[in-house]
Length: 422
Image (tube, rainbow, N blue to C red):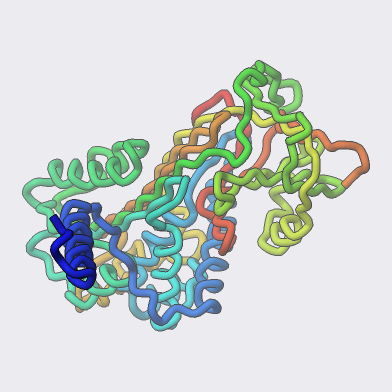
């Protein structure tokens, strides 16, 4: 059919055909692209400050919720992000206390784009693992929340504002927020706000959710998982399924000191990893006494790839924390009192924090790890040796899941009894 046309005509025809085909693909390939936070003014120094702030806060929260003999699991990133959104509306002494407690930069031009940059880095569109975070604010529909504040949350936290009617439809509002949390955490975090936690006096709720699912870069073979004893405390053991990797391909980043073994297990693509800190001789108190950012950095800097016989228990945890008293003790009591100043949200000093709740889930198995967490802030109106080392986690240990690029602690926990889900 084209034989009667000149060569130039044929070329034009095919160019038009390709253009039409490309337009067709664009029309029908309507996969939504996640919105990006405004990080145009972010600097490497600012990002480092935000990451360091979150990691310091992680260790503070750990020390606050740590209970002897009990498992721990939480997302410091989720808690600090929800509180950082809240901080954006704080003023005066309330803002100072929150800044000191969260370690975040007080300068808006440093903090906001850096928070946005971290958000964008974590919410990548294409990766073999799943990692995404989400933020939202939920104002009472007839309550005056400043457009400037809502704009800050939208631009830098990608937090959408959705009006609800806490006054007349409290239970429906609670269910709406809980459904949002479930959706953003792949149904792993349910009932974040229990009945009665929101009331007709609630004027604003802020939420953060984070979800992660990743396969190990080098998976454990299920046929090697065997029932073994795990020492909970002296004279107290439980039988648990213990995974293992002991072949020639079992090469991991590893280091040890006189009192500690440290192992890093990367996830697929090696952009995220789990670092396990296993005290020797079941001496968890030594580890907790020396758990600070300086030591963590030193231990991780000394990691070197080598053959290691690895034994790691399978475990699943479901945890929930009311953080009100913990945050007051860490240095921000004003935010929970009638003296709170969140005038950056409403233009007047009429709000205070009535509840900060955090819930988390993790499942570690042969394939990899699935983890999720959510944080809600409720506001009311005022009235090494030569021999191959054996890393056998058969007694209590601490672990972290970190972003490889920034070393931000996304999740953190302690396993005392892997047979218990709490």
